[in-house]
Amino acid sequence: MSGSNFSTKHECAGCGDDIHATSLVRIQCTETSLVFCPECFAAGVEVGGHKAHHGYRFMDNGDFSPLNNNWSAKEMVQLLDGLEQFGYGNWNDVSRYVKSKTAIDCRDAVNNIFVSGPIGSLTYHEAARGQSVDHTAPTPSQPGPAPSQGSLSLHQLLALGFMPARDDFEMEHENDAEVLVSSIEAGPSLGASARMETEDEELEMSLKLAHVEMYQNKLKERDRRKQVSKNLTLVENFFKENPFNAMTGKLTIQKPKKKDSKQELLDKFKFVSSFMGIEEYKRVLAGVSKEREIKVRIKELLRYRKNGINNLQESESYEAERIKRNKKKADRKKALEAGLPEPVSIEPSPVKEAEADKAVDLDNVASITGLPGSDILSHNERRLCTSLRLHPSLYISYKTCLLRDHLQKKRGQNPKPVHPSGLDKIHRRKIFNFLLTSGWISAY
Image (tube, helix red, strand yellow):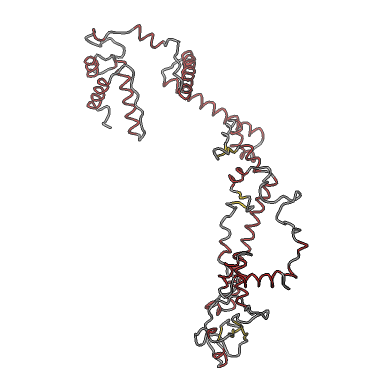
């Protein structure tokens, strides 16, 4: 029996008929791998590269009995394939796979030949049962590539993509490495490839060997990376720094620490230390540090100028007020997040006190001339404020808000409209229409 694939149909290279439909044997040329029926072989048929003087061998169709019983070679191969596929004890499935034998016949054949028979007596020993050694388990002196299951919980292993039952990861390093060998055939195929020249066969074999070698190198790199991670306990240290929350299924990633500006400067200019002396390197770092300080100071002075501060005394009071204002904002934000009412400031605002001292009853004033802010308004703006009985400072505040929103809209930003308190909807609409007709803003 030269081959075990008895289900393949073999056509004669000479006449083209199915050989085993009329004959128990076929003749295969040892040089071209072409097969012939006994009639064509006896007639000396020559096809393609096959010559009558080439070597040959006889091949059967599996209809003989190798053990001198009622089981043919074809049925015996089907029995073993079914046993491997469905498992010992599933005799009905094995019987359907063999087709020509019943479930009882399959069970008796396996027990009498492969378990209790001569094959079983030479391959199976009851005394040695249960004494097998698991060579895949890591030893303490040589830890395996997989993460230690004792130090990690099941949730942490699943977060890594490690499957304990398979002792493998769901995603490996070079996960597509198997593509190199998945399409490699075990041996030469029939047909056109059987008539390839010797040089082409050698080239194909070299290509297959190269793919196998590349695949082996990738597997070695996988094992090396796992071994390094195991030896250095990288996984355990990672979960110590980033605890895993089993309830949410997410990692509690810590916020990165703020970098020290001095250390950041040293890291940035480390490359110049290779071609500079010590004193020169120190002077360079000192100059860069001084430049940074000057830029920060210039930015601070520009902010003071933008807010109308002209001397150091005003800057000190401005910084004090800015700190208070930021603290109030932080307290208000915390109160809103906690669902508590906003804290009420008990300190009187100097701006509100000044406004209270200068409060004016606009209902009894025929003109706004002389009020704060009226001197910077145009003639039409004064007429508008007079007709609306509107204080100039309130008009200027709302005009500033509208212009700012308009500029943000032109830049493609989404403005957040802010309206001064004490201004009703009618006044807002009339001011908006006035600025629109005057050309200050465009409709949006």
